[in-house]
Every structure is written in C-alpha cells, then in structure tokens.
Image (cartoon, rainbow, N blue to C red; front, side):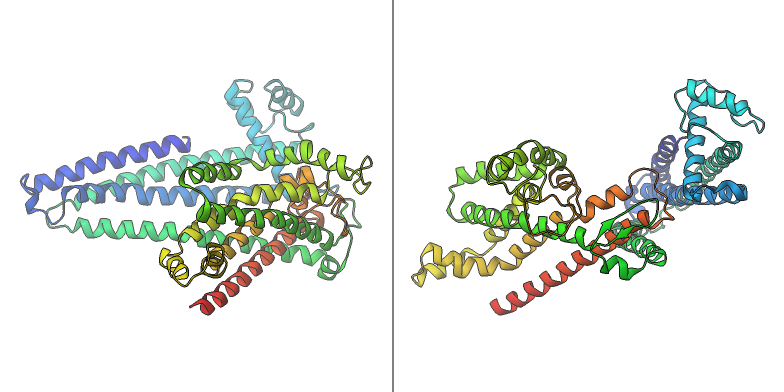
Length: 487
C-alpha cells in the first residue's frame, strides 16, 4: 500500500477514535460534562493521539531502516567478483536500485507481467527489450547478477512494505482501543493530552539540533575517510586544484578558498554600504509614503531565484563589463565570466539582507534616545552617527554576518558569472571558482565514493562549515564587546 493512503487510513482511524472517545466519556457522565474530570474534547484527543503517535513513529522508523537493511542484505548476496573495473559497491547498488525501479515501472505499465518480473530464470535480452519498450531502460546492459539482485531487492521491499502496513494499522487500532478504555469520567485526559503536546513541541524544537548534529557527523565521517586516502598535508598545503578520476589528482583547497573569499568580499563591498545607507534613509529620512513603496521594492530582490541572478550576470553584467574593461576598452578583462561579474551581481542579491534587517534594527532604537540627543543640541546626522548606529550596531553586525554567510554559500551565480577556473590571482577580472561550485561538480553524476575525487567534496564542505562557525564566533565577540561598552 502506498504511504499516502496508509497515512490517510491512520488519520481516519484517529478521527473515528476522537468521535468515539468523546461520546464514550459523555455517556459515562450521563451526558453532563460537569461530571467529567476534563472537557469532552480532551477525551477524544487522547484517543486520537494514542492512535496516531505510535503508528506514525513506527512508520517513520521503518521507512528509514528498511532501505538500509534491504540494501545491506542484497549487497551481501552479490557475487564476490561483481565489483570490478574500477567500480565500487555503491555504484553497483545504485545500478540494482535503478533496475528494480525500472521493473516496477514496467510491471505497472503492463509491459512486463509480475511473473516475469520475479522469475529467477528470465532471459536477459528479453528482459532488456521489455524495459526498452516500456521506456524504463536504465543501463545499456543488464547482467544476470544485477537482475537477480534487483529481483531480490524488489521482493524484499514488497515484503517489508506489507509488514509495515499491517503493523502500522494494528498499532493504530490498538491505540484506539487503549484510548477508548481510558474514556471514563475520572480519567485525567487533559493532563495526558497536555503532556503529549509538550512532548511534540520538544520533538519539534529538537529537530533543528538533531539535524545540525547529523550534518556535522556526516561531514566528519566522510572527511576522515577522505584524509585516510588523501594526505591532509597535500589538501591544505598544495596550491593546485587539478582533480582527475584517472588518478594522480592534486586537490589543494587554497585556489577554491581564495575564489570564495575574493568573490564574497567584492559582494559585501557592494551590499553593505548600499544596504546600510538605504536602511538609514528609510528609517530616518524617508516619508511614510516613500517608505511604504521603497522597502517592499528592495525586498523583492530577495525573492528572485539565484539562477535568474546567474543569467543576469552571464547575459548582462558580463558583456557590460567587457565593453568597459575588455579588449575594446582598457584590455584588463578577457571574458565576461570573472570575479568582478559574480561579485557585483551577488552584492545586488545581498542588498535586501543587509537593508531590511538593518532597517528593522534601527527602527527598534527607542525614540527617547533620539529626543535626548536633540535636546543636547545634536543635529539629525550627528544623532544618527553617535546615538542610533552605536545602539543598533549588534543587529547591524548580525545582518552583515547573514549576508556574508549567504555569499559564501552561493553557487549558481558563481557557476554562471565567475567561471570554473581554480587559480590564485589578485586580478578581479580573472575567471575563478568557489568551494561550493566545486562541491557540485565533484558530486555530479555517478561518482565513485571510494575515490578521493568524490570524497573531497565533504572535506570542502567541512572547511566551509568551520569558516562559517568562526565567523559566527567572531561576530558574537564583536556584538558582546560593543554592547558592554554601550551599556
């Protein structure tokens, strides 16, 4: 049974349990809710929670564990010589999964009978022909070991889904019966429901923390695996980035790190002054009508997809800079893809991040501080420089930090606007690339995750994570220092 319909059935059972639980509690009190410990809705909610919570928890755990278990079982049954010719078990299992998906699609479309799909003696050529006729072919040649593994994979998944469906429905019905038995007047349904809601809120609050921990652990483990097969001294000591999946790669991070920082600095040099000046004008000088129009117009920039910014850099800003700094102008620029192109467009994209947050922070400064400054004889500009901006400095630093983190993690603008050359250069009109762009390129396609050329993406990601963490710690130090000085 598809997961969607299973969820719908469990929710229907919960709704039915809610109605029955509420009615049973009222019936036990003789129809008078004053004889109940809790309001009738709490009794119904108690039944619904007991029907939904265990069933959904089992479903989530099962959906996470089943693919891991099935893949490990199928991989263990594969012949010893299946991994050859520079391949890896991850690539073989990806082939098995795609073949199994192709078989399922062919059966669903009628191009293949269920008997043939599960046959252990199926003719390989006939099998391939039927998949091609159904438009589901995923490889040029399906070998017998891959076909057998795909059939096992498909059968084990089908069995697992059937078991999951039965157990989830059994838990939902059992929870409903349990809740109905508790629907008597003296039962403290409100306490149970409120404790359940509190647990739900704690779980929701924990998701962000657990997700962060999971991301960090995945980066750490894969980074350690990378450094086992590629020396860390070469990764941090080499000034050359030249990956080659044929071997003899040079994977020095410094050209990528330099390109990331160079483009980010240019973007911040564009975004911070313009965004901050715009925030000061909107909060201190603009009339209500001007502010009502200008602030939403600036914030529209934040809603434009980054691929659109990338196309803008490639088709508009790059040719424009070439006309001024190219061979027809000053002769400094060889092509439209350069650090300056990506930096300018990225700076435009970051303006609303700095402007909107800084404007909100400046507006949060109490008016009494401005009035006190005016009372001492200060002008409006002096009040802004000496009172408003120092008071709003922690928030402004946070806005700049957010913009810096956004610039470091940008990919599409870099790919289309800055090029793909990994080089160390001070010329802002040279083509360069960033860490994020190379992470994408190293993981594009069926990468062999046993090779350093693929695992290097995790080391690059870990490096970016540490840099961003360092920026956050530094910004927190600056904020606390200025806040203490101000107070």
